[in-house]
Image (cartoon, rainbow, N blue to C red):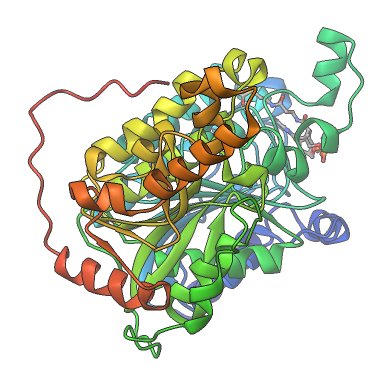
Length: 511
Ligand code: HXC
């Protein structure tokens, strides 16, 4: 018996070595951890339950039958817990055929996807892999197809998170692209459909891996990734933090953590957050941090479209999604990128029943050919559509400007806002005073005195929250210092919000 047990241990030890000591050392030399080391950091201590550690590939082409087989076949799969909550995981092992996906490797992943769906728990993929295993041809492509299909079936049912921790190509970027969030590690991870060598062959373009698909590119230009971290350890610890904010599935409701931050807490400094000069910026993140429990805010897509801020926080221990125009960047204007970024976030929150708190200070949509040619109409419509179809509690606070169509879009009463507050500094109008007067009193433009009088008149009448409040579009004008308490109370009141939507197959979001 002892001998049998020892044999098991020996087989396990061999499987745990993946591609062997030399390749593990090479992985470390590149500043990367191995698949198992990563899982140990991501999951609670000793909580990992591994599946299919002895699975081997079945390929006989290209001399694959002559090579020694490596148990596990390039991916470590199983489940564990993050702060006690179940998550399913798979981690690509770059030391085995560059983490590439074979038929059996795909079967291991789809087994975990199916289990995550049955158990209705989040799934996290750690990617460090070169796509389809070239030697396997269509068997590998078929395997990817099976993974992709499950990504889509799981979308909106369980959270799916992809962490890019090495050079990733082909299917190892397409599967992440269909999940909810993608995070990368700076300097060691890349994402491209085809790598620099193929790019050179096909287009003659010479480009480095970093320039083609590094973390900087994907978090600032393409918006493919939602965030980046300096190394594997920091990245995985931040993923643990993110998981703490997310519901396990679309019906579980948000997790509830003990909070030591009184929901009644008032913050006097908010009374002076908005500067007297309406053209002077201020940092909307200060408001988010002062409203959220313990100032804990997990920002999504921090470095892309910085004119809008989105991310998770908690109020009264329960997760909320914050969406806020950022006056510090482009005066908080809505452009195509900001609209797309916020729309995706709003849809995630709605899919997983996370209430949304919106802070509004927006001078409108960004005018100009660059925006119009870039499809601002369609991208802006995405955000309008996302808010309009949301059935989660929507609490909105207008801090300053809410001009034009952007007023409607930003979770106004008209598109479904449940509780809409304004600070006394709010200005709710079709546009700012200067633009408005120059259009409606064009005949007076040559007379500065008349224009000044008209501008004053417009400012007094329209640049306040009261015209909207008189119509009931704003439920109440609140003292800025009480914002946290007012939002907390509104969210508590809305906890059992129920909305009936007309029956349909699905909507047709402007893509
Ligand atoms: C088989 C692979 C492999 C692959 C890497 N390896 N990718 N083996 N199939 N797809 C092997 C290498 O041969 C090498 O083995 C080891 O993994 C490490 O790879 P290196 O090239 O030495 O590492 P590095 O220089 O860091 O480059 C990593 C890489 C590069 C950028 C991922 O390997 C690469 O470009 N691979 C091919 C990517 C690709 O085109 N994949 C197919 C995509 S199509 P040895 O034994 O020499 O150490 C696809 C279809 C899906 O995925 C459908 C999408 C819709």
